[in-house]
Image (cartoon, rainbow, N blue to C red; front, side):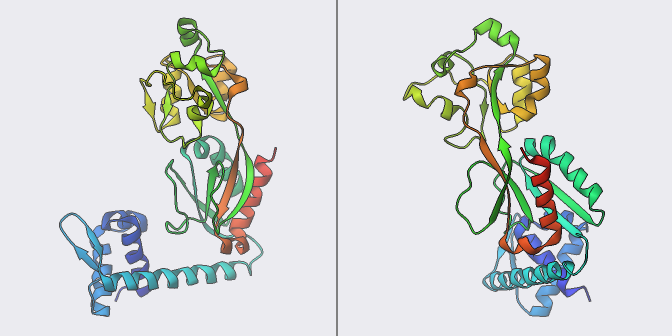
Length: 295
């Protein structure tokens, strides 16, 4: 007989991750083994949990009720384990952390490595994505978020500030001229970062331009590294995280412009569920971030 608790975890994983294959990858097992766990659950319960077609699956009515119960049970177990962990003197266990691609790769990863060197009994899974992550539904312990936060029941601790810069390559500026005011951007190629949320990015800089429209960008991307390369190649002007471009600015490969018109600094927060404030591996990690990123 397969492990009942593991079966519940796998069932929740299939639903949350959207497929048997994704759950198999997450639990590091074969897809047929995931199917076997689900089938044994259904056999034991005497109900069908998932309605399957050739391309997708969805919860049955009974499956939805069982899923809700499993989430509650697994959450209680996680909380109990966290409480037991606190009986030890050192932080231990696995932390699941999520952050944006650029911040995670450039600024956060070195700090994570330093934290792990100090806390030998902690492991960290760092997931980098520019989409919004629901840390409760997706099972993360903490998210690093940039910008003003919406009201929520989550705990938020400010760890640093987010600074951006507007710049272009010397070749681009020599060919097309250097903008002196936001209105000049109407005649320039402003490379678009598609993940900017209103009123961020170019929308903030150009708000005084009212209904006037500039040139449509010849290049847009949801990846800051792709935009950086485009700017280095002289395709246009970018507004990007200053940390990401520090070396390019130092070497003169990119030149800062419109310094007085850059959008204001935005906060960077570590965000986590309220119950996490008593979990030692999480509190030590957040405190470490505060110390490392302090201004």
